[in-house]
Image (tube, rainbow, N blue to C red; front, side, top):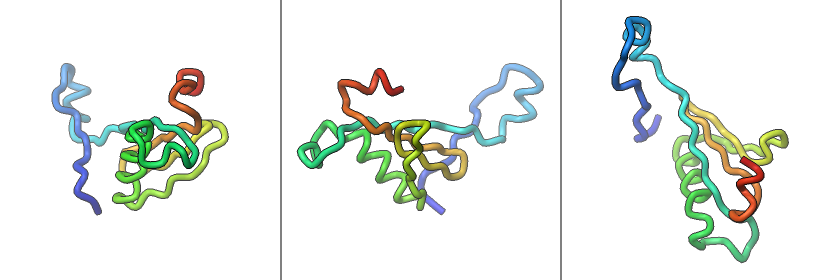
Length: 94
């Protein structure tokens, strides 16, 4: 489906972990950015643009999630999150 490899556990410390080492882990990828035309194609949006690009390449539809106050999507153990806000106020959001 994609060129992005799935993340697997690389080591285990207990027998229980050893038994589950091949299970996929859920990974969260967060992309920060600013909304508005004045910030399009600027360094302010590198994280946001990267997450949106990866999600698009994987065929993930990013939908607005009111509870998360941002856009979310998920595919094959990867979860994507782009908070809706501005870089200087994202500490209050996340």
